[in-house]
Length: 352
Image (cartoon, rainbow, N blue to C red; front, side, top):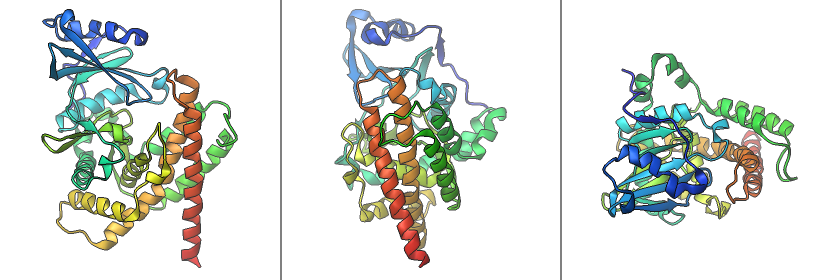
């Protein structure tokens, strides 16, 4: 059955990003005709560096807040917005993410989910990180369910990872070289060929990934002691180890990037053990399986640094958001080459 279409309202207009709090009323008036504009309050969310997000609250009823997200400039170059709509609809039916209410030319309106975004402290909390690991494992297990809910003509798109095509497209969209810390386009293509050869040799498992589990895309509801994933802009089939590696890399932050916050080996082992117990629906998991996935995760941190390093260059050329995208790209590329050197050194030591 095709679950990719629904009663989501398609609105034939755009929202003025420069007058966000006033212009969102165009959407709310259609979704909630009984709401009065003079009883509306707005909550601006400032955690993202790509889109603009505002919560609309009627008569102080925060539980039924509606979120209105306006896409960043030119983000349709790097994000398939139609796929995002389909993903949101399907994943919600499977128990993941918010209900989608409406789409308009440059954004979406959807359900507010309660909870606090993770922080560099809470992501390490022994009462919280196992919930995240379990949630990711259950998310990855939705592969077959997502596939059967897609239209027949698009199901083949789930047969291979989105990583390599997306990375190559990103490189093609890259602007001219920005600084000496960032490789030129020819070097990026060369690195991509090496990275693809190296990672494909691992034969890592293909699952349905979120692909963007930074701390701000994970909500912890203290009252229910539960975790929710949000923002499925990049969701799609990918390697199991990539999603985990990318999540670990995001412990370093974005605006306050600090690679020293990458989790230590003992934490990674505990996290991956919880994940595997859930993924395989088994109370025990052998050390060999844990060690294998941990090794894959470390290798796939390279793909995370590569992905967001190139992404940041595209954003630098297209975004009006006040953020040092070039500086962020330089930081990610610095970590990429340091990690690559460490992996090659370890491989040489093993071979000798």
